[in-house]
Length: 106
Image 1 (cartoon, rainbow, N blue to C red):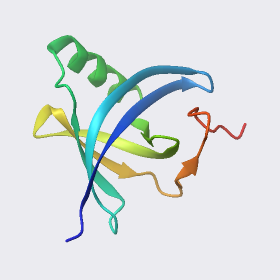
Image 2: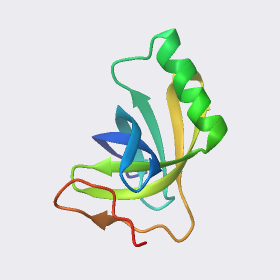
Image 3: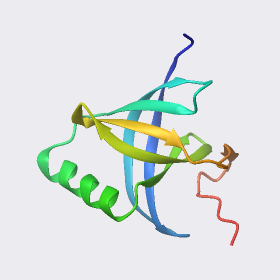
């Protein structure tokens, strides 16, 4: 099984210009599945974990960003609060944004 491990960020956007959360993660991907497992680094404290759970309750769609590249993913907890499962949203493609901003088409 081919797996890649990289540093990345999960971002939760309220709208085109407002990023409400940017979480550093280490992701392990199996390229053929479009899924990743992520570990929050550094691990969350209780307040940060509750804040993330609140965002997940509102909308589990996050942007997974590797530098200037990004893809939209669904996020869910697994194992413990600092471990997450990510799945590419169907139809989402990896985009390149040199200014490191979310690429909205509207």
